[in-house]
Length: 332
Length: 280
Image (cartoon, rainbow over all chains, first blue to last red; front, side, top):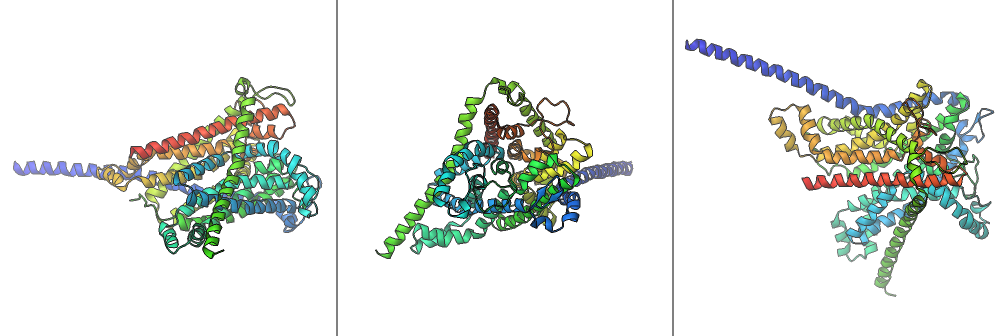
C-alpha cells in the first residue's frame, strides 16, 4: 500500500518534472526566437551600410568605366553632350566646408569654454540648451532664412563693401550676387557652430576638476588654467567635434543648395556663385536625362559617402576614447 | 608693467574674447528664430491649414496636403524605424557583448553621420527604380534609415540605466528572458525610450534632402502610398526658391509650423525625460 502510494507519488513527480522540462523547452524556443530577432535587427545596421556602398558603386559603374579618374579632374558638366567631370563640385564642397570649419572652430571652442569655465553653471546650461534647441532647426529653414534674409543683406551691404575695400584681393573680386560661395560658407558656419559647441562642451566638462585645481594651485590665471589644463586634456575630443562638424558641413544639402547659386564653375572669388557635391545631386538626380547622367551623379554620391564615412569614423574614434566606459552596462 | 598684471590682463582679455564669441554664436541663431516667428505669424492664416497650394503666381492657398503628407511619411517610417531601432538596442544591452556589439554601435554612430541625401539615393535605387515611380513608401523607407540609428542609440542608453537587479529578480521568478526584457526592462525604461523616439521623429520631420527623389512632392492630395506625396519641408524648399512673393509668404508660414512642431516634440521629449528621473 505504502509503496504503491510512493510509486504513484513518484510518477506524479516525474510527470511534473517532464512538464517543467517541456515548459522550459517552450520558453527556450521563445527566448531563441526573441534573441534571433534582436540579432537580426541589430545586424540590419551593418546591412544598411553595406547596401549603401554596394548599391551605389553598382549604379555608378557606367560613369566610372567611361570617365575613370578623369571624372575627378575635369570640369565640364554637360548632360546634353554626355560629358561629366566633377571638379567644380569637389572644389565647391572643399572650399565651402573648410572655410566654414575654420570660421566655426574658434567661435565654438570659445563659446564652449565660456559656457563651462566662466559663467555660473546655471546660466551656462541655459545658453547651451538654447543653442541645442536652435541647432535642431531643420536645414531647409536655415536655407529659407539664408535665401530670403541673408543673401539680400549680403548683396545689399556686405558684398559691395568687400568689393569697394578689398576688391584688389582675388577672393573679393566680382559683382554682388547675394547667392554666392560666401553665403554658403556663412550659412554652413551658422549651422555647424551649435554642433561643435555642444560636443566640445561635453568634452570640456569631462576634464577632471582636479586638473583645473592643480593649475590654479600653481598660481595660474583663468586663461592659463584653460590653456595648460583644460585644452590639452580635451584636445582629442575637441578635434573629434571639429571633424564631426566638418562631416556635417560636407554633407549639408538643402541650405547650401538654396544659397550657393548652383553654377558649376571654379572661381577664386568668394563672391561668385558655386556648386557643391550634394547640391548637384539634389538639383539634378530626380530629372537625370540619361543613364550616364544618373550614373555620374551616383559617382558623386559615392565619393560623398566615402568621404563622410571616413570622416565620421575618425571623429567617432576620437570621441569614443573619451566618453566610453564611464557608464556601467545593464547586461546579465 | 609687471608680469603678473600682464598675465591677469591677458586672462581678462581672453575671457572677454570668449564672451564675444558666445555672443557671435548666438546672434545669428536668435535672428533666424526671430525672423521665423515674425514672418511666420504675419503670413499664417486659416487657409494655410485647410487649402492646397494654388498654381504658380496665384495668391492664396495653403500647405494642408504637405502637413498631412508629412504626418503619413512620419507614421509609415516609424513603423519600420522604431521596432528595428528598439530591438537592435535590446540586442546590444541584453545579449550582445564583445566585438560584434561594439561594431554595431560604431556603425550606428557612423550611419547617423552619413548625409541624408545619400539615404535618398539608396532608397531611390532600392524602391523607386523597381516600383517604376516616386512614392510615399520610398520616402518613408529613406526616413526610416535615418531613424534607426537614432532610436537604437538612445534606447540603448536608456536600457543601460535599468538596474541589473530588476532583471535578476524577474528571471529568479522564472519569467523567461524575452518576457523579462519586454515586460520588465523595456517597460521601466519606457519614458526614456519615448524621449528617443520623439527626438528621432523631430529629426525626420524636418528632413528634406532624402525626400527629393523618393516622395518627390505633390501639389495635390495623395490617395495611395505608391503615389508621390507632398511633405511640409519639401514645400518650404520649393516655395522658398520660387520667384513669387506669395509663395515666400507660405514658406515662412510653413517654417513657423514646422519649427513649432519640432519644438513641441523636443519639449515633450524633455518632459518624458524628466518624469523618468523623478519616478526613480
